[in-house]
Image (cartoon, rainbow, N blue to C red; front, side, top):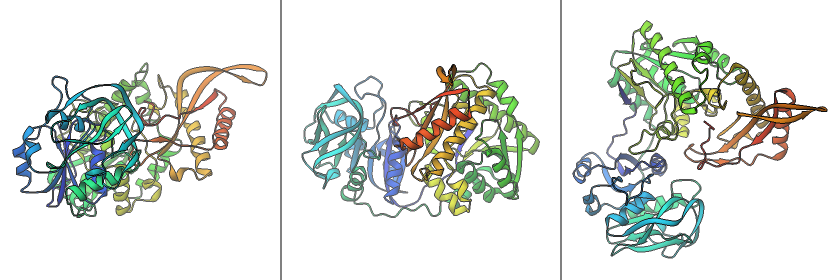
Length: 524
């Protein structure tokens, strides 16, 4: 079974190649480059000099970026690149692991630092040149590293430093090689966009000629060439990702698409009804499967979050296979987007953060000829842009992200009907209060989590012993990084009061004030 790309980005435009060393932010770098209207292409770190040279027949390669990664460059077997790439005369920017690798391969010394840096740090820019042009003085940046450069190769000069990192940025201006210890691609780096802009336009001399406007036409063409006259089935949840994937696929193959909404019982309160109402009106082959009891049965005794996701993923696919057999469908279409894939360890050398039910949760013995993922290289904001072009209603376009396994991964520990019902109402209260205050406009997600913890409380003059609910609200642009939202205490108090008054089994409410990283947005 093959997972098939639904987006074909190949066109003769100014292009920045990004060598993927397994970093969680690799595709975020690509996203930031796209925002500058420059085409980006992610390639394996093992790509050879000759392969890059051959790409020049199709692309106008203006620069190369080495991504971050979870490894240490001095460890045996650590990912490296072809040394010939450094002498091609193409400007190179190394970020974090890429920063270390460029120095290490050129003769510098890299070792474990005395103290790692994780989160927001301040660096002093001593030489504002190249990627740091116009950015002198102190800069607020996002660090995530334990290694450091001890000494630079001949011809390299340090551009910036921090308290724990004497070489936080460097340059070999003759070879147009630059390195940044921090991550300019994350929003927490205050002037990160300017740093990337400097590399792309000042160093690489790119012209902004990339646009997403024709994505739908290209995706339709790719789907048609992939599936031909075969029938497809799509897992439709009603969220913006699967809804957009469904409309694109329907435009490509019309009546050869069957859309299936599987009601696993873990949706938000009232959501199954709204999904059924909207998609029943579109005229596509749309059906609903009530599988609530089936999913609950499969999750009996399951407490490990990874196993929970995998079980749900397997059960989803088994339901789809049964429908597909009836409809004669050969391909499974999914609304997978890039953050789903990278957190499931699908990038080259990437660590798995957690399995998404529609990525790493897919069983190995999948009975389809292939899986088509038209949106697999897009971020949420790009999907929303495409959704609007397709005419999807705003309530779907703006719907906050929701995990495929639904509330099952917001119930910590074993999933039971009682816990799911409690969480549905608690989550509804959170949404109502945040939306009533108009706080939702600036939030990426806001939801409730039912913890696998019991706690002592007081009701009236009597001791109570009940559940704990955590509230999670975050701000983000692409879900690869996120900051906890500063919800006013008055709003949090109203949420807490309503939950504990309207849901007596819950006696304590807490608020999650952790950023991503180090946490993920979801608890499981």
